[in-house]
Length: 263
Image 1 (spheres, rainbow, N blue to C red):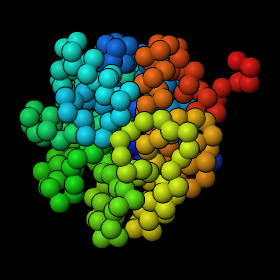
Image 2: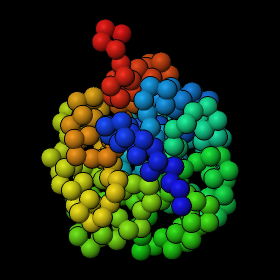
Image 3: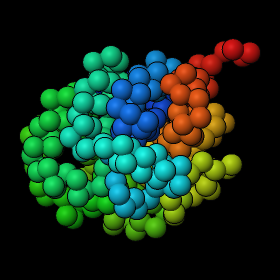
């Protein structure tokens, strides 16, 4: 089964670099701006776009992303609009588009219905922070039916048994959480990141991407020396908040190494 996110990571690998995975919450500051910002990221080196569904009780999001999602919800964003966002992005660029969501909104809409609409919109699959493989039987079946990637998370606390089960359950890549805590830009990359990636690779993961705390180009280079992809969220959300679509494109170019000196 062809995985869109795996293909994006392999293209980056063929160019001798880690894949750049860029996150934005859907509906912030509005649906059209989310689409425009995501396309700007793709045009400036993002290989995979991660679109987050705003959630009223975020479990792993830091203050910047929380504030953005609270604003999107206050402005009336509805779960079903995420398919408009995904379609708007996939119609304008070749980046693989994954939706990151807690599992409740998927269950509420219906797992089959959600997956079907995501596939129809051109989406690559789901990143599911609070769904574990042990409880994902329906998602396994439905994601196979619609050819969608299923990205599960592993962390510094994952046991070897849990790591192996999660790697085997994932399709596309394994999301390696580098810190125990919430998202947010940090000055330094967690020292645990490299060991989590090594454990994922040892458990059979062909592609392991690192997220949580990445905010600068030097982080991307550092993580890219051992990981297959680098996930950036908070820094991009802050750029969109403070400088709009243009600022997001500029940061993506810096992170991907496409920015020209003095530009």
